[in-house]
Length: 307
Length: 276
Image: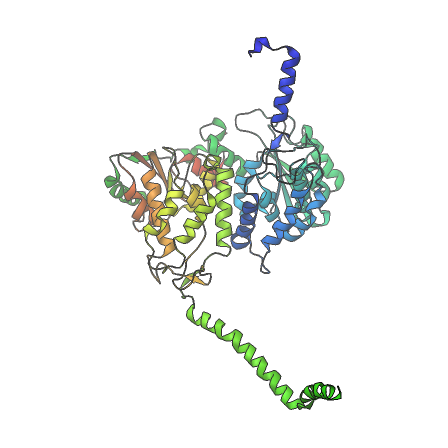
């Protein structure tokens, strides 16, 4: 049956059937081996990152998380994660909180695994869910590995409710200087007026624990600067914080973060470092002709470096 | 009837006739008996399987759960092209390599099955070695997602930062202590593992390979380091036609992207300002 031979209504019917046979929802399906990954992340956090002297019970944390996996994929509320949060929460060091919108990877790189800053994805409950997806099947009890609902499918989906609950907790436990990284090259605006930061973090910030809020508006290297401090949605954010009584400041292209962005664009004109340093640059040295020459070369190189 | 009743009553009577003192003695006796019945097997078990004591830190807590979780994270999320790998098999092969064995007699053969299951192709020109520059090299590959240090390969990712060893008289991991390379023995299960994977990582490298060296210490190229001892000698001349060494100092160095990375850590020097 060629396309030419199909009537419009038959084509439409075929498309409907094809759609039904395809994914039910718009989002990625449940991550395979979800339980092993979550147990492993929890164990790793407890053994290597931030051991709890009382000892964390990762099995109990998994059991608490699991409760949402039996619920209808569009009926999961943030409060369904209350017990999970209760078991996995821990304090956040002062001045280490980093909120963000539209620059997940940059935040992950900059925070250096929690060494420099501790964004939500570096605290235990955030780490557990980072980059994962999960939901129950619509009409059966097992997990749906094909697709899961996004906010466009339904509001009370498992993943969004998780991040809403986690965001609220993270904001509540933040103290000292609060940092916020926004993307000033984002066409729809640096500060999403409806988003996780606006709806589930700002309202839960504890005024008595916070000294001030620092906003960094970062721009993509070589891309247009859609908004900067004091403009557009950034202005809306600044005014909101002012109204709430917070002390705040705003910086365009905060230097350490811009330096990090430049690692990927080191030859771009916007990324050229001070000329005084540039003149000291030595061209990269290389060795050919195989391994037997490499050792003496490296020894010579090492001694040359110290001359 | 009366006789029977008297008979049954008389059978009960010895109980009521036993003195309180005797009752106490009997209770104590039975208590001791139970204690001995429990204590002896436990004592025998413990005497037969005391774990060896070493100078180094013991196996990382929850070693197996961490290993498995990392394997799945790597094969499902970090490099989904490896989604076909069987993490259960890989985890088993890993522990089989050192459990119930003398942790000071480890050989590369012990790890062969594990190496086979975790074989991975690193694209040419994407191999990055490091020596005394771990933080910097890994910060760099975290940003430059297409470059690989050993710790960015499946097996390196799984084992990074973990410690492990077994005991010949037990099927358990030794969480108390593990051999220290210098103070106990050099052929320990931990060091042998890293030598074996480093060797393979170097053997597999092709094209242009890079190494990040630390120019701010006295032994920039240390012939006793894993890079100097193992990796350099296992590069294949027919596959590797160029080695680029990036010698980084505490303030500045040869390779611009890495220098930018250093500036991120310490943006104070004037050399870290942008040219305007």
